[in-house]
Length: 128
Image (cartoon, rainbow, N blue to C red; front, top):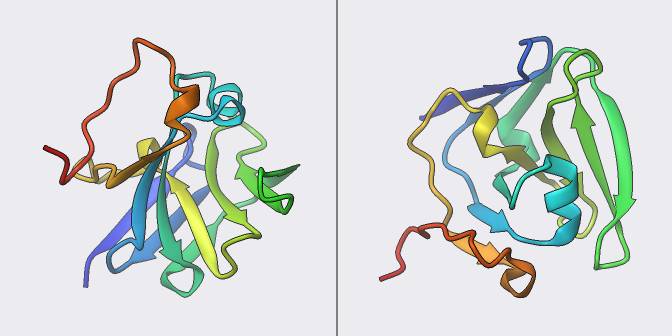
């Protein structure tokens, strides 16, 4: 079974995953742009039972478009957001793709493309 580790910039917060992700989603929404300081966010979603967090995390909670909370877990030292729990997907954890040591993961879908910055283009696995 495939095992991967994702960690923050300073290494104090990490999450180990086992098995394959449910999906890998690139999000172009303005909230993700502001959270990451980038053009989009890419979440690698796993069943929570496939994950083991380690270290101390601080949390930031905001309401998603579903009206339900999303709990972001970030390192209190370096402020990297490593993983999050969306209440509208009970039992799922999203892990920031850039925090993984495994550089072979790729988005399988894109969402909120109507909020995509004009210059931001990404390749989605399976799209022609």
